Image (cartoon, rainbow, N blue to C red; front, side, top):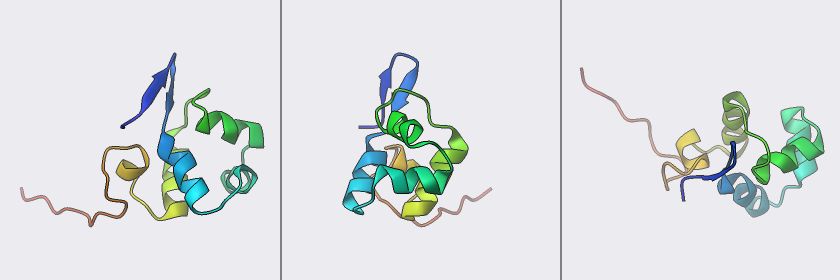
Length: 85
């Protein structure tokens, strides 16, 4: 699943899956991101959009690629591809 739209917001299920797989609490991620706990909860529930800089911080926290976090890739840490010109 890439992502799911709820009205004007998107849900990225891997945000919750990664948190649960790493035995983290929403409060811990909220503190790391410098947001209120209810804001982080709203991210997970697709009630509000997650800003790109916040998605990058979450990906960095779990050491996964942004593509993996948002469901564009199923490999968490794919090596950076080199493009020829």
